[in-house]
Image 1 (cartoon, rainbow, N blue to C red):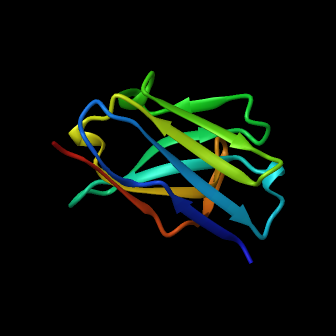
Image 2 (cartoon, one colour):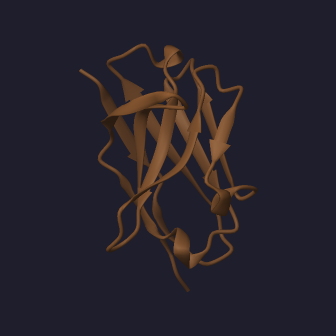
Length: 118
């Protein structure tokens, strides 16, 4: 069965950095686009970024462009979201999801909490 397990969240000061990881299993990882989606407290889901199957192209929400980098290691079935220059408005639960680019998001992880606060 498809499993997506996020890790790497935590509390960070404004301006700081974090790297989220997502370990995937149960499907052919290297053949699928993948995504990160977040949900801030009291708000709806917000797409953050997606990446094609090879990792050659990634797309970003305007507010995170230049600060977040989405990458993948197809040999390790793992995604990475490197987040820098973090702002309080980046505080959210971050989910990785199978799908993206042009494919629907059909499986989601359990999420990892990122809190940006001084």
